[in-house]
Image (cartoon, rainbow, N blue to C red; front, top):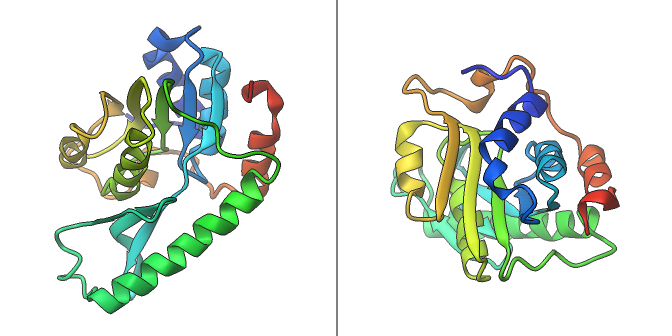
Length: 212
């Protein structure tokens, strides 16, 4: 399945999530690419939107390759191949510190006027524009599970089968529109896949129609 852009993918996800329409779900986006998608889904489901801040831990010398992730609380997920990628403990500690500082700065930038929306007792739907290794989604779901949502759903347009298997026990429900074996990168499944700027993220989060 090929999506024309993130908005088209979000509309298809909203259809797949239609069971939650009218139940005031909390739609949480992993920045930055998923934020415009979360706005569309919140609108379609009459829900509320916010961000869940997690960061991937980058492999030494290869910043696009994830060896794990860290959430806003400082909890760290490491892949079983982190050491093979050249990451020793000193490197990991420094990378965690770097990414936590980025998370702190993004929280100040994205939601300066209010704290994060409390997910406790809520139907929580975590959105990303696609999963590759799934590292950041694992961190996001772990962080949210600890905050006691009523139901925790992971919803993405595309992910490889092995990543979906890793995530199965991390959420109450998994929704993935396409799970091809021939998977190299999320962007290969979009015709138009530009970077999402911080200004667009802030504009989406400032729209009070989706913060009720």
